[in-house]
Image 1: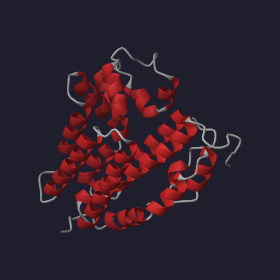
Image 2 (image 1 turned 30 degrees about the vertical axis):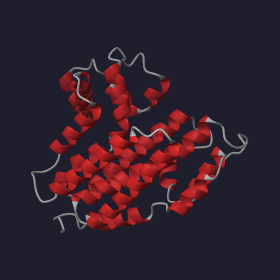
Image 3 (image 1 turned 90 degrees about the horizontal axis):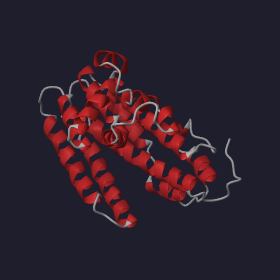
Amino acid sequence: MIENGFQYAQPRLHARHGSRLDDGTWQQLLAIDSYALFLKHARQTALAPWLQNIGSQSDIYTIERVLREQFRHYTMEVASWLPVAWRPATQWIGHLPDLPFVTYLAENPTVDGHLLLPWMREDRLLSILTQAEMPEGERGAKMGQTGLLLTLLFSVRAGKKVGSAWLSHWRSLWPESGPWSKPLEGLIAQVERHVSVFGTLEKTSTAQAARVELRRQLQLGFRRHTFQPAGVFIHLGLVALELEMLRGGLAKRRLFNFGDERETTP
């Protein structure tokens, strides 16, 4: 079934979907121990756009900030391809990587702009989010979608789980109910099942296998739901999983100084 207005987006989604790294390329990358060499070789793949602002001297905080910002920007780009009614829900996906920070602020209500760690100040969105003393009307006018994140923060402080609060708002951003709602609810159920199991896995190999299975299921779903809203969000889920792998590859090598530290990249 083709949803009206998705004809423009689908070819672009397919092009981006097709450019994702295959398992063989990932295996070659992850076999590299050196951070500098990992970064160099990753830049020679379709991962290059995500790495534009990450260099051989970037610390772990910069790596994480850049990848968060890149994912937000990508969801905004995808949203621009879609009918106007679907853009807010798509942009909201871009804030999923910010949820741990929302939880941190909710659990530490005394934190303000003066007590932020240096890496927190570098992320413009997260820095603005901490300006809790700004009058509510002014805050909303200045912060746009960040104001929605602040509303999410207040919900979590009131006792709601951050994932549930995020999901409730995401559902509220959907257009009125239609035939596309059942596939979206199915996608939610699929991810919730994965998350409930993933959190109980103790072995790294088992957790990785669970991620691989989720990726396989999402790839099947992407093919089933072409020209539909569910296909858009499945694509973003696959992108998020790829960025998770990239983040892990960079972070492990940066934090534990794998390889020759004297190696540099341009």
